[in-house]
Length: 351
Image 1: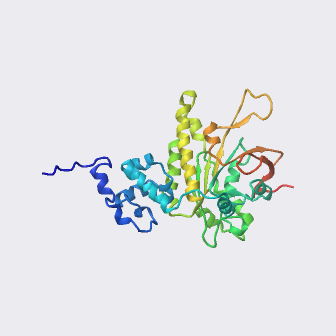
Image 2 (image 1 turned 180 degrees about the vertical axis):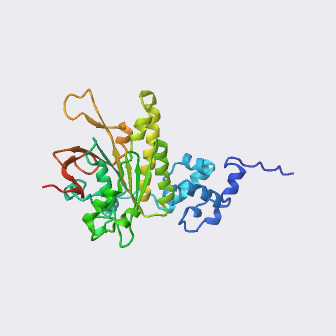
């Protein structure tokens, strides 16, 4: 008598098997165009992943095995096959430097409203990357963030991201309560021939973050609910560090704060890459008491924040309405400075 074959539990529980497709051969030869086409993902598992913000092949292909397994309730071998299938469908592989260069030449950039500042940024604020603005109070961080909420909605030929009547959306996560729609209205007056103020205001989604957990939830909600369905092209987090700095005080909480901040930053980075967003994060500063020469001002957040942004910009005050922007770190842009003006109409060139 043939012995009964033991049930294989290495792939997960019975509940897991009911939620996934057991026969992956049914999907062989089928073009993979969505996550429901991936082997191992059934309707129940797909709904779990979509609810958690993993609604595209790109998001599946770039997630870690452990993270996806914890969300979908699947075994690691099943998850590994799903991720590999997503990567194969997207043809993720090495590419030549020439291909990278051609792709980067097609990257969209957002004008700042100042030709001098645009030149400093190599043509404007880059999409698909994180730009950090740090400096003391009244140096123009929040004002520049407001300005980009307006200029990103300009037509492409005017330095914006609007394609015809398809207006881009902006998600503005406000942790300090400094967002002012009145500034949006006054800044938009410069482009009255190209912009409708009411449409601009409708396209800016504002979220007031009341603590660090709430701030993290707002960014995750944008990634899960708005990025797949809305034409989101700009994410602003103003400021990145404020709540973390206030809630985690003293060296005893530093490790916890940095771990939590690192998790938040990686969510922001994933949004920039998956959604090809332009991301602006503002940061506070602190003074180094042991520095006797040079500028003692340094950004808050340590190495976690320092490694996150592709471009770090130090803003400081000058005479009157003048402000100075300095590229501190960038893989492409040289360390250089530009002077711009901060007026009632927003960011402008100065004589």
